[in-house]
Length: 390
Image 1 (spheres, rainbow, N blue to C red):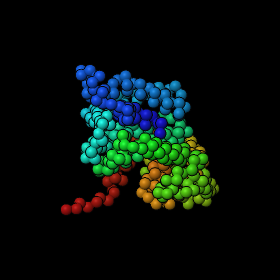
Image 2: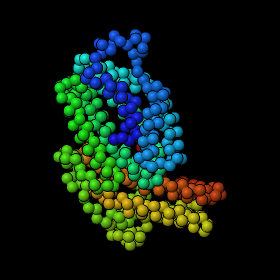
Image 3: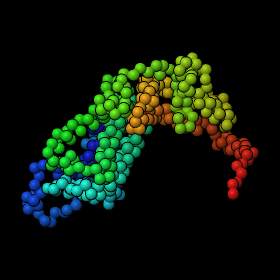
Image 4: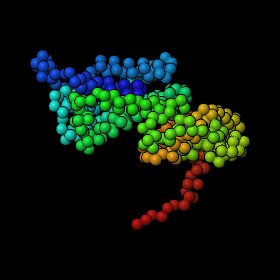
């Protein structure tokens, strides 16, 4: 959970609030010492944001093993986007931060109604910020190697666990579920309960981080097994025949090899023209590419298929295991976790296929494109039209 987005979120939104949760803090004494001219409202300054971004990008760079050029791109993205987002959303974020600090600094526990009012406003603010951070980190993927993307998957999986629990607590409080005897930081035993809760979340984050990275050295936490989110043997499930075969590219499932062929092994898979091969053949015919252009198209296809096969060789077993987890999941939360991990593991297939299409699109000349458009017009005109319904 030490991913860059987690660091940014906690650093910018909750650091000040955490200080206010110190049980030894005496607001009445502090108010007498603090000069009256100080502002009542808090918001991260330029230097604060710069420091948090610098620390987080250094950690991000070290964790993924970024080279100097990659790190330069990363820092540029975050130094531009984070301050811009905070400036544009100040009207929403500043009240969220300050109301939280004021509640935590009070000597008296807030009522469930007051917490519910705050949580209902805080939930969309936190969701928006975490969503923006996910988009920002995902924008780095095109600059990363496949292995670096796997590491990023692990970081995001761990962060997503922490975010899920944080948003779940906000949602519960928003529905009136705040219980001062359990949730108030001054209540007896609160620190011990929070420590146990954090350890539970940490073990869950570490497990799903390992799953995203393709490691099987981390057993699922007992509470995930008890709740039916993952099977007890999830960390050691065998994955028969997953490394055989490649992937297809049919619409939103681009990059997934037809199951029947993959299950029969490489020879059977080779006998089936996958969607990538069909796409290249149709592309060549559509633009009536010459021999030299078709040779280049074949080379592009071969390279993309090699990348696809290499990825399946590394992650095919994990994909099979996650599919088994998806089938055996007893809860919607368990299914969602498996689906999210599967989606991330299949992203390289779509990326390789999109790269193949981009390379192909550069092959036709302007004349070939124009002639292809003219040939397409009669076909479009001859296509049956849907009748208008009154």
